[in-house]
Length: 160
Image (cartoon, rainbow, N blue to C red):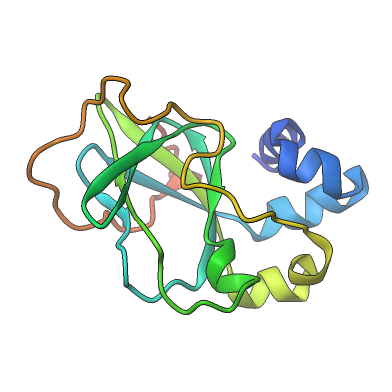
């Protein structure tokens, strides 16, 4: 599983461009896989934000002040606002889209800082959409979201 995570990190432009390849196994070892069913919150606007997220698979809708801002997909990331810019709350709501599930890899603040990522990564200010679809494209957002799923048992093979 570590080798799969390293390969995934190599495909994410943020890490491929800014970190030496030799650092990726250490980062991969600190990531936690979480799986969210369609309609579940990954983050809520205004809620405390203490993790960095990268989408491994699936899509997630970005909402700011209740307005659709875009769709995030594989390799897109968020959470840097809290970890690098020291903003304590999430600037957007992130909602898992269907069909299927959204799998994300998360990194807690403590590990983010221990790996020196807060000093080594340069994350420009950017809109809520990174590599995802722009507002106005069709979305499959559910109408009644529920709370986030618990961290998955990825080691036991709970994969989408």
